[in-house]
Picture 1 (tube, rainbow, N blue to C red):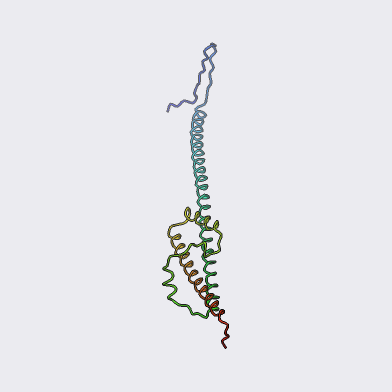
Picture 2 (picture 1 turned 120 degrees about the vertical axis):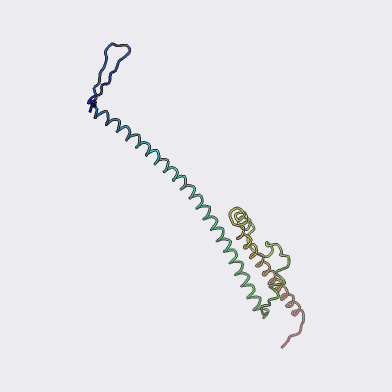
Length: 188
């Protein structure tokens, strides 16, 4: 087997006549080639790892943004549910007081007939600030799903209608009270 044990490198400068000669053992030359190959692979792996980490950072930023958006959406849903609960509690309290005052039993005809009428403006029936309602409606248009919005509007319309029915009953009771108080007779 004819293998070279040494490699010779000759360096010939242009301006001088002195030639430099470097003798490198073959094992050192082969080792340096393997080392350079290993170094290239290592650099490639480092670049690939850097690219992977940067893509993970970008994905993490996107997930944080989506998480923030979903938290805002959940907060919006919670505020809408609290508004519904408060409205229903207020209506229930008003209904209970009105029934106690008038001794009227709950009639099913009010629910079906009077909820079909045209609803008045909500700002005349409820005591919520208009800015809060406008802000929540603007947020719901941009963030909420259509199904939840339609359900929310339906519940809101039904509660406003029921509140209007109860308010009409209260006004009727006030008219009867005024009519009876106009009489000067006392009933035993």
